[in-house]
Image (cartoon, rainbow, N blue to C red; front, top):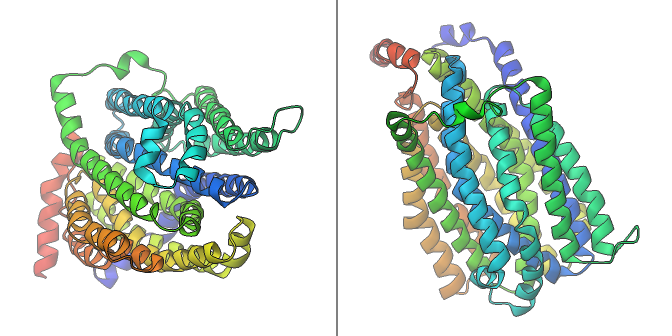
Length: 472
């Protein structure tokens, strides 16, 4: 891109637009991560095995997240592009489809967690002591799954229509509720019995209810219409269902297969020594802090780029997209440095010591280095999806995970019995290669594939201008 074009780009407007969306989302996720850290600290007082057990239960909820996130990604593709073209009916029917699909996933995982917790946890670890505690937690926490999914689908449409503060306020109420009720139920304050990990699970259920209720009430109060137009949610036609599933299917496959791949990684890590399992559970909590900041940029990319593509402003979408990627990576680098610098007090506060501290510190350092490239890949993939290209990032991520990453992790962790930290490092072995390929695709602009009539009409002229620029 020429210097002239760079001077014409309005950086102040760009930063302001990103901040309006990214900061509330990042704060919301930071609040959630902080709540999870405090959870871990409070559970940590019960012993490292309790931390490991609850951490493995969190891996099951992460698998649920992977299963429904494909519908979130697909839904936001439609929400943001229809928002850009001001197509209210389009937002309503795509919200109805997203809601139906996501709630189905939430109910299935709720049933599995409540009625079959032993079977679930046998997949994740061979340590009986950890499974016994995990079953107590999962059987109760499973009730929160459908409620969490309901909150997420509401948050998706609110963010896509630039109502990003409502999810943040709801998260504040939810995190405060969770911390307070943890104090009450885990240790038995205010006349309640001391329930241990079961108390933590009960607090999670109550907090998820508070989150859903606050989101619903605040959306109603500010007059956000799309959640409440129930008749419009089910105005499905064969053409709409086909288009929705066509766009969502690659994303669903991506998230599901990646979720299964991450489950395999958790299975490998769950068969290491108990100190490493506890460290991995703590690491996953801290990872949420990095992902929390990334989520702000991811939502900004989905909303800003998707809205531009939907409105036919493809040049603006392209100019915003690559800048968002590098801004994201710079922010993640700063967050990673901060976490590494503060690793000692953080890990100590989360009850890691001795070997578990060594493993936890090593995992955190490895991750914070890899996250700069990893989050760049994720941000590019989310940008492609919001613009209508749900295939490229999906194919690359799945192929590299199953052909390269998982064989390295499984062979090192289960066959070669390599050191724990080496096995952990193999979790990111594919990221640099994918990053180069994704960058080439980014600058080709072939990821701009609108679903709105305005966007489709403007596409030929934009692509022709890109060809002329490439020849110049």
